[in-house]
Image 1: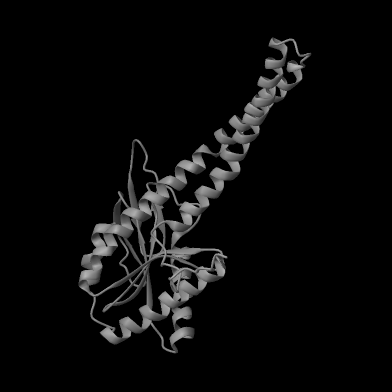
Image 2: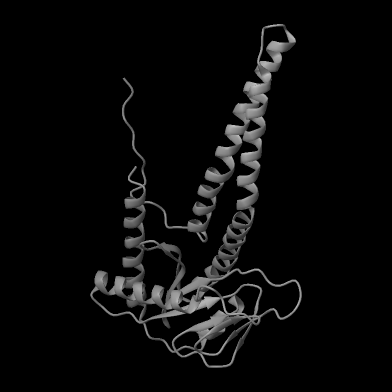
Length: 261
């Protein structure tokens, strides 16, 4: 009798940059591409079988199955066509989060702990930095740039404009909510208050700031290290380790709840 075995790993690994978006894209691919394609292929197989029977004089009925196969192919093509923009957008978001995540990893040399794709209740925080200047949530916005015209992000301290348009969903509200959530989470876990600053980064965009930064930074990713370097030290190494330990424990607990096996 074969003895039972178990994984030597005690905990789930921490999450990778863009993991939530990748999971969403995989689910969308499965629902809108794989399933319709499987249906279409099944109907094509049935139609082919009937044509095979016709060829060998086996009293076939290929017309009905051919019509069904045609409808199946049309249905699959329509589902795929309708979801191609969403799939492209998700792929772009994944690539953006990976690029920013790899860039942020360099900050470990400056005493930062870096976390990616911290999952909350119905949302995720793309990146979290914990280091001497404090705790920072980083929201990555990999938005497509216009082929022509004004390709800059304008932040006046209160509102954002992408080119000459305001975004439908306000990233400022989203970023501040994420920072507030993380601050409360760390407070409940550690019993201490860790001030948490929201940051929004736009890879590949020029960011024009006209209203100061106060409680929110809106930057190009490459500008973030210098902003962090100019901040005074607020956390001791022991406090950095404390906050990082509790956050990593909370991430692993969330992963265990999401994947019981």
